[in-house]
Image 1 (cartoon, helix red, strand yellow):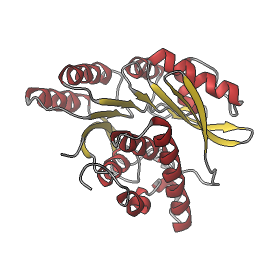
Image 2 (tube, helix red, strand yellow):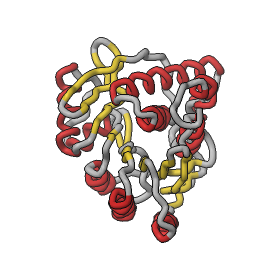
Image 3 (spheres, helix red, strand yellow):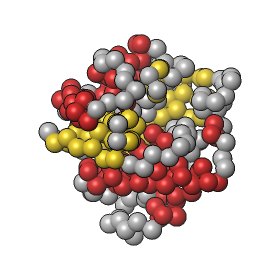
Image 4 (spheres, one colour):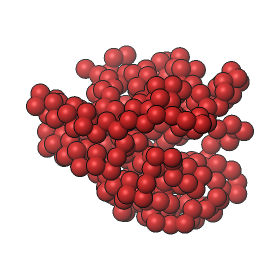
Length: 280
């Protein structure tokens, strides 16, 4: 059987981000993705002058409760943007119930902000809630802004290598999770700062003169797919960075408007050619 993943993210009805990136990426990596919307938006928020936002906390509670009543088990739980801090209690209870049943891989992408600022709908209470949820993670994938928020550190546009690795180490000690801090600006270029069981390392990647919404969702989805394929954390981070850069490059070359988001479909043929132990 294919591994199953409960994907707990927001759903933007226009442009690529969150579930519209997560679901197809996991599916092409032969992971059966089961969506749980945390919020419903008319579009992703970056680049649109107005958008609607509907909190789906009640629906989330009902979905997770129904799954529990059916005794459904999942190989992975992957959380992203939360529609309200109240959702943390339900999600944590779901994670604990799943861990009592089996051993799911829990990836928390603490979607809070970027470039030193919180995203539009986010509040300080959401940061506190995410700090709590992060402690349930096996794998944590903040960007540099989110890492600073989780640690209570001042945001820095550029980090030196020692500080970047120190942040990864502190987050790992704080949460007991493997950590990959994305979008780290170093003097030498872009990198991902990682911590894995007391071992810290940097994964440099090609920096392109382009930035699209949904890139963090794509990276985390790729990382989860590789980890479910039993690849090592370091190998998974490196492969995910390579595929994400490739998607950005192809989205740029295809001329997509930035606010439409990264186009994961442009790398699906490459992902489909991967050799995997299940379903291959």
